[in-house]
Image (tube, rainbow, N blue to C red; front, side, top):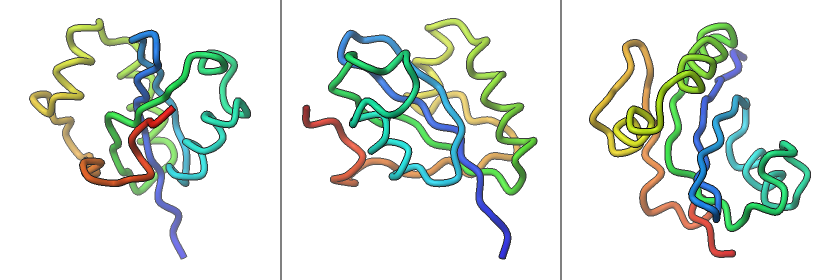
Length: 104
Protein backbone atom coordinates (compact mmCIF):
# COMPACT_ATOMS: atom_id res chain seq x y z
CA UNK A 1 0.00 0.00 0.00
CA UNK A 2 1.32 3.43 -0.96
CA UNK A 3 1.32 6.11 1.70
CA UNK A 4 -0.33 9.45 1.04
CA UNK A 5 1.59 12.54 2.05
CA UNK A 6 0.08 15.86 3.02
CA UNK A 7 1.15 19.47 3.45
CA UNK A 8 -1.14 21.44 5.72
CA UNK A 9 -1.52 24.99 6.98
CA UNK A 10 -2.92 25.84 10.41
CA UNK A 11 -4.14 29.25 11.47
CA UNK A 12 -3.25 29.86 15.10
CA UNK A 13 -5.38 31.77 17.57
CA UNK A 14 -3.01 34.74 17.32
CA UNK A 15 -3.58 34.94 13.55
CA UNK A 16 -0.23 33.47 12.54
CA UNK A 17 0.09 30.54 10.15
CA UNK A 18 1.96 27.26 10.62
CA UNK A 19 2.83 24.94 7.72
CA UNK A 20 3.70 21.29 8.22
CA UNK A 21 3.99 17.84 6.64
CA UNK A 22 2.27 14.61 7.70
CA UNK A 23 0.88 11.30 6.48
CA UNK A 24 -2.22 11.66 8.68
CA UNK A 25 -3.76 15.13 8.87
CA UNK A 26 -6.33 14.41 11.60
CA UNK A 27 -3.77 12.69 13.86
CA UNK A 28 -1.31 15.55 13.40
CA UNK A 29 -4.00 18.18 14.06
CA UNK A 30 -4.93 16.37 17.27
CA UNK A 31 -1.26 16.35 18.30
CA UNK A 32 -1.00 20.10 17.70
CA UNK A 33 -4.19 20.75 19.66
CA UNK A 34 -2.94 18.59 22.55
CA UNK A 35 0.33 20.60 22.62
CA UNK A 36 2.23 17.54 21.38
CA UNK A 37 2.89 19.06 17.94
CA UNK A 38 5.46 21.63 16.92
CA UNK A 39 6.76 23.98 19.60
CA UNK A 40 5.52 26.90 17.48
CA UNK A 41 1.87 25.92 17.86
CA UNK A 42 1.99 25.23 21.60
CA UNK A 43 -0.06 27.81 23.46
CA UNK A 44 -1.23 29.46 20.22
CA UNK A 45 -4.68 27.84 20.07
CA UNK A 46 -7.31 27.55 19.00
CA UNK A 47 -5.85 26.01 15.84
CA UNK A 48 -7.82 25.88 12.60
CA UNK A 49 -6.90 23.67 9.66
CA UNK A 50 -7.18 26.09 6.74
CA UNK A 51 -5.42 24.33 3.85
CA UNK A 52 -4.39 20.78 2.88
CA UNK A 53 -2.64 19.43 -0.21
CA UNK A 54 -2.13 15.72 -1.00
CA UNK A 55 0.95 14.27 -2.70
CA UNK A 56 1.92 10.77 -3.79
CA UNK A 57 5.53 11.10 -2.61
CA UNK A 58 7.19 12.32 0.56
CA UNK A 59 9.77 14.29 -1.41
CA UNK A 60 7.10 16.19 -3.38
CA UNK A 61 5.18 17.02 -0.20
CA UNK A 62 8.28 18.17 1.66
CA UNK A 63 9.37 20.31 -1.29
CA UNK A 64 5.96 21.94 -1.30
CA UNK A 65 6.15 22.48 2.47
CA UNK A 66 9.42 24.38 2.00
CA UNK A 67 7.88 26.33 -0.87
CA UNK A 68 4.85 27.38 1.20
CA UNK A 69 7.05 28.34 4.16
CA UNK A 70 9.01 30.68 1.88
CA UNK A 71 5.90 32.52 0.67
CA UNK A 72 5.00 35.95 1.94
CA UNK A 73 1.91 36.24 4.10
CA UNK A 74 -0.23 37.71 1.30
CA UNK A 75 0.73 34.78 -0.94
CA UNK A 76 -0.17 32.31 1.82
CA UNK A 77 -3.52 34.06 2.26
CA UNK A 78 -4.22 33.67 -1.49
CA UNK A 79 -3.28 30.00 -1.25
CA UNK A 80 -5.68 29.49 1.65
CA UNK A 81 -8.42 31.33 -0.23
CA UNK A 82 -7.91 28.94 -3.16
CA UNK A 83 -6.65 31.40 -5.75
CA UNK A 84 -3.10 30.00 -5.92
CA UNK A 85 -3.47 26.32 -6.79
CA UNK A 86 -0.12 24.52 -6.99
CA UNK A 87 0.77 22.27 -9.94
CA UNK A 88 0.66 18.56 -9.21
CA UNK A 89 -1.21 18.84 -5.92
CA UNK A 90 -4.61 17.49 -5.01
CA UNK A 91 -6.05 20.10 -2.63
CA UNK A 92 -8.21 18.54 0.07
CA UNK A 93 -11.56 20.09 0.89
CA UNK A 94 -11.48 20.96 4.58
CA UNK A 95 -14.80 22.82 4.53
CA UNK A 96 -17.53 21.23 6.58
CA UNK A 97 -15.26 18.73 8.34
CA UNK A 98 -16.18 19.03 12.00
CA UNK A 99 -12.81 17.66 13.11
CA UNK A 100 -10.86 20.16 11.02
CA UNK A 101 -12.13 23.46 12.42
CA UNK A 102 -10.83 24.90 15.66
CA UNK A 103 -13.31 25.06 18.48
CA UNK A 104 -10.94 25.97 21.22
